[in-house]
Amino acid sequence: SRARAQRVPLGPVLARRLKWANYTETLPELPAGQYVVLEYETRFANRVSAAETVTPVKGADGTWKVGAYNIR
Image 1 (cartoon, rainbow, N blue to C red):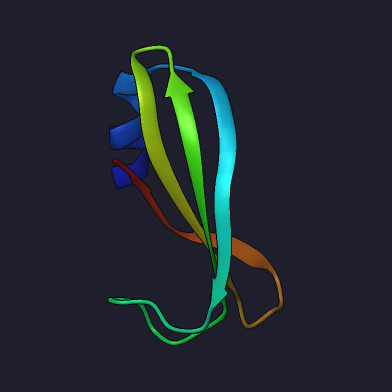
Image 2 (cartoon, rainbow, N blue to C red):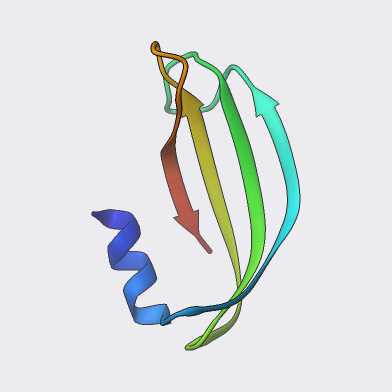
């Protein structure tokens, strides 16, 4: 997956801190739904500082699953 391709070269996570969380029902390039956008400040073995954005989405069955992931 794209997320795995981004993560593997960075090595293991050494530290992760939640910077902010935001609930929304609309996001660019994604269908309307229930989303929580989480941004973490993360330190990996091979990268001192990165911003990880994890976006869980609520499915029709009521469970939350990761719908989008990005590192910058």
